Image 1 (cartoon, rainbow, N blue to C red):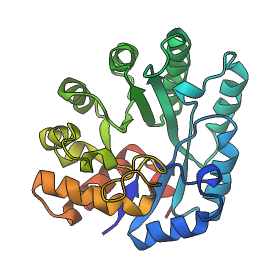
Image 2 (image 1 turned 90 degrees about the horizontal axis):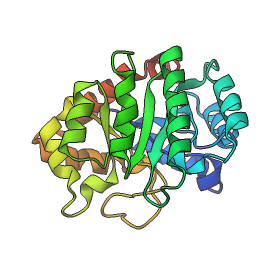
Image 3 (image 1 turned 180 degrees about the horizontal axis):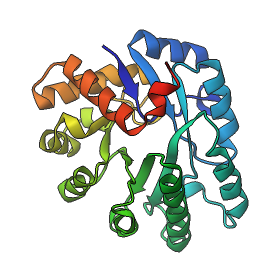
Image 4 (image 1 turned 45 degrees about the horizontal axis):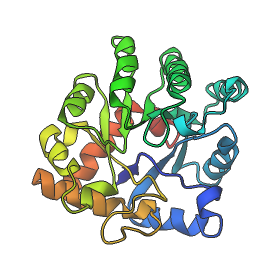
Length: 261
């Protein structure tokens, strides 16, 4: 049995003092692959350093997070685009739109989101999407890419059943993390409705730790707790959850397989 954490910030910024221990605990928990999303151009060096230490277990994504977009993003975008031919990059992310705290930069977010989706199509790389309080705006843009081969994961999925159905129809996976273990989480009904073939597991470490660690720093070794909750909801074994979600992610991000073989 092996798991993939499809979204975890396991690098120096958050795990400077115990980075090695966190990775080793994950591998001991059978979480053998962890995808590290980029959030800024500056974050990529930490990510590459982490991947260099554990190239069989850690895998880099490259992207500009919607809440980290500078007012003049051209230099950052140019640098990030230059990384896309680097063989260490397995996908693009985390990218998207976030209007939860601030709606004043919506047009800037749209422009940068569209640019990075265009990269994904051109380089045939799957994406990790961050969408928060912006599903209508994000889907308006994503619909322009229908038929282009664009695919990926809706990280930390927070939409409703309509958004989930759109994702399923267009080959996207729903990223399921610690929130699914929270009491009365609406995500539980989404999981039951879409089924294992459309799910990816994630932690979003160091954020959103699952029960019973809610409120503490998250880490990839907690993936089996999330998997067990998904197994309970889908009325199947945790082994089946591991097998299905691992296969789902490796299908979308084939470099996870070629880089670790």
